Length: 460
Image: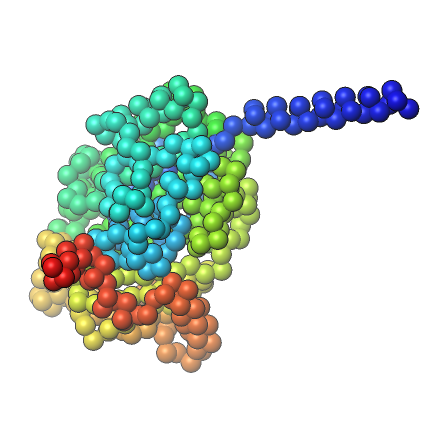
């Protein structure tokens, strides 16, 4: 009996030793996130677009391509605050375009550093304050050089890492890449565009910059492979909000809010898979925290994507969006927009339909060519210009039948129950975020950096 107890104890010691040895060998995964700037998801090759994107297309064969990924705002700054904090823009105060989050808000840096991670950002920032986003800044003249330096340094120190590579392409002025690859006369324009020579010419330059971004993605992937870090790295590439041409950026249509998202994680994600789950950018922070071995903070608005990466095709029933024109160039005075989307329907609430919707793209040569064609008597151009400038109070679209959200179903009796359901969901989300609708829009100027400076001067 005594001998059996001795053997039992020895067996338990051996089991515990093996458990801790296996845990020590199971390294925390690395996280690499690559983000474009003003790229409509539909324009990327593997999403059916015309842009030449061989690196991104290849990545889709190596990982999972999502067909229903969304962000909470169709603008640069709120989107980036959204990604790094895992919370919705109005909730953290970062809903106008040029602004900061509330002091005291936590970002991915605060969640991953205590877990032993180096957390860095290279490229475009458009966030603040520094106390909320104390990212490490890798050295390098561009994203690819920064990737090589950072990966090599982390490999040498055997440090787990999370790094965000934020490109500035294809944001205007569309002066990078090779437009000659794209023949203007042969391009297929979106059905909501007005066909003018100016529109076609600018599309060649815009598509060229998407190809330039694809080259950056390729360089980052090569740097990862060169340092032998591919196998233990969750890599995600996203397109951010839509382009700054009409009916995309600055709108709550899918062309503004929907994003490409491709994820590769060897051994965890099935290569060449497609996922139709409804996901949001706010889901990234809890995903990283859980994958790193931590417990996601209850303040976060997102849900971990780990089950989705494992193949689950369901995640959220609704996704939400908000747009604030205060703080953008040539923006309307308080033209607030909120939206909610299910798998089939999109509901949009425009707070002040009596005000003309404006933004900086309306000063562009291509939009002015739309207006000139409309003024010359072209009915199609006139209707598209009118629809861009003037919005009804409520819009409702069946996304499954009307991909470009052109046939407004709001007010039709047969869709009354759908409209009421989505309205209730949107109002509940706004309440969760502390969003008071038009009053929040009026207060938006105080949240912008210009507004804050003026307010400080008044207080002196």
